[in-house]
Length: 294
Length: 170
Image 1 (cartoon, one colour):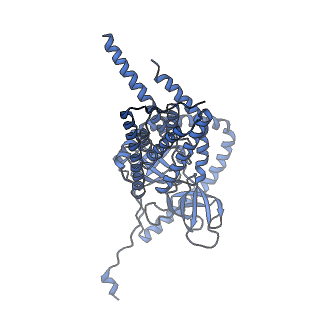
Image 2 (cartoon, chains in turn purple, green):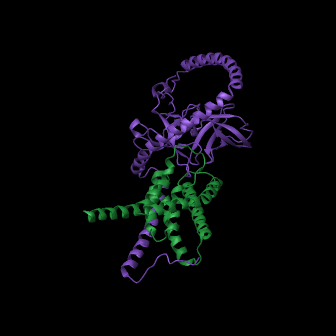
Image 3 (cartoon, chains in turn blue, purple):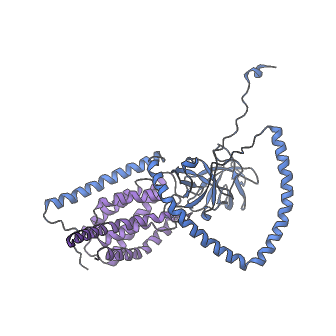
């Protein structure tokens, strides 16, 4: 097919000037956009008012669609449960018997734990959550792993607060609108969480891979810090994330590195809990009067 | 009375003819509001695909700067750093203008190839900007998304053509 002249420029001065002005605007726009990207690098919270406004406007759409998706999901799950009823029943009975025994043991441990803490004068970080809300969506075409949460600054949610689900840690708040906020998921490349291996207490860092997994890096060298199937939990080091929240399970080990899968699955669009920032309890201040005393 | 009606109809017709491409592109960007939490880039960037569909279907309709506000809308709805789609989409339009002036033979396959190059450029660019602003994932995560987008493109062009037919019919 021969080309058609797409843009007939003609001989009119006015048309030519308009075209030229259009290109000037476009080029200037690209330069401005590049400047905006630079700003986003050095100040991720720039323009948060505008971004929050659009976030708020979009949240009701996602929230409305969410109920449909949830409905469909539960129907298919229930049909599956009907067919698996007998086998599931047997398995659950066995699990229940094991769980009962473990529960008794756990109660004893819990009691002992509380007693020891009382002796050590440790106070539990039992502050109530900031907000409980639903995860309602994410930009499935985007390159960052963000999820949208249906609670914003009007419920006290601030950037930086940790977010957990029923199963374990989900991520932290990245930016907020008034009625919705964006959660930076654990699996984003920009997320790093201090963790420890629940089995050995070995400290490590969990860094998002951007593909649904986490990279675990041991902080101490030598030995084999990770084993397949290890559970890693938050260590509480450096604050923000409270200790002992389940984070991930190791699926693949390569010497001192390991790949893990998050325990909490944000794709289930379930409830999420926004916690206050965890502050490491300070040691009691040393008394200058008693230091010199014999 | 009849003349006023005609005038009103004309105005409505012009508004619709102008608004349909813009609204459909923003609707494409708004697929980011779908209620799903993805762990990898799981959907093609429909805003970009609609934009390219309209641009290749009606090259004379939009000047290059139109990509700026549409890109801004895409950035805001999707939550990418501001300026990322603005810059990439406008650069695409500028390059497409150059291609329009240089390329002698155009047919369906050439258009698809041009669109594929634009898609790869934009997705790779979006990934680099996400990395630059402190996040994102490994480069292999964008491979499936690029393939999906390139193969989705003909369907998107069909949608654009159907919308085009509707917006220009009385």
